[in-house]
Amino acid sequence: MKKILFSIGQYVDLMLKVFKKHEKAPVFRRQIADEINNLGIDSLGIVAIISVFMGAVVAIQTAHNITSAWIPAYTVGFTTRESIILEFSPTIICLILAGKVGSRIASEIGTMRVTEQIDALEIMGVNSANYLILPKIVAAVIIFPILVIISMFLGIFGGWLAAVLMHVVTTTAYYQGITLDFIPYEIFYSVVKTIVFSFIITSISGYYGYYTNGGALEVGRASTKAVVMSSILLIFFNLIITQLMLG
Image (cartoon, rainbow, N blue to C red; front, side):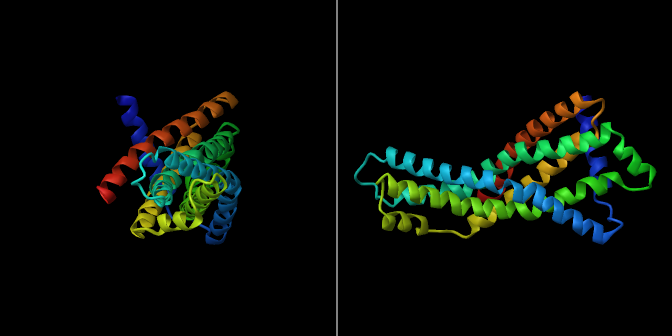
């Protein structure tokens, strides 16, 4: 328990350093642009592939489980839309990004720590926590919701593609399902979740990387801890946000 409280206090102290005003705005903006590319654009491929295939799987499984003739065909499209928008795109995609992006951040900052680059920044009077972690947090908060919205469209498209190619349901019925009783608030709910998840992934990964001690082996361990802890917190806050916004 003492170790947990110490880690929480250390994390809060780090975040206080992170959110101090950046000294050089032009440098900060350039860093954000670089991180948007590194953390977001580079992840677009895996997000697109997983979204299309998971949408297809949801549509096929839904159709497979419809055994009653009384259940309309448009249920396939409706269920695919709800599953993709409410849970798959914001939660599962962020879990995947926690593995890809989180490990990258922790290993990058951890390597800088063990090679004493962070110490060099501190000696030069630079707030290393702010300089290294804040651009990543801001970039993730900007680009992750965009990735999730793209994932929603691709997931629904993948469901339609599978439904038509597998002769599960017609295009007309599928379209009727994805437009039936659509509530825009669900998009807002998913975006809010994604913003919270973005902060969790980047801040937790930055924390484990920043306080890495030792050598290359410890950098690997820090990356693993960052991914595991980020994933656990994502699931925990997913429950809390869902209860607050949909409960």
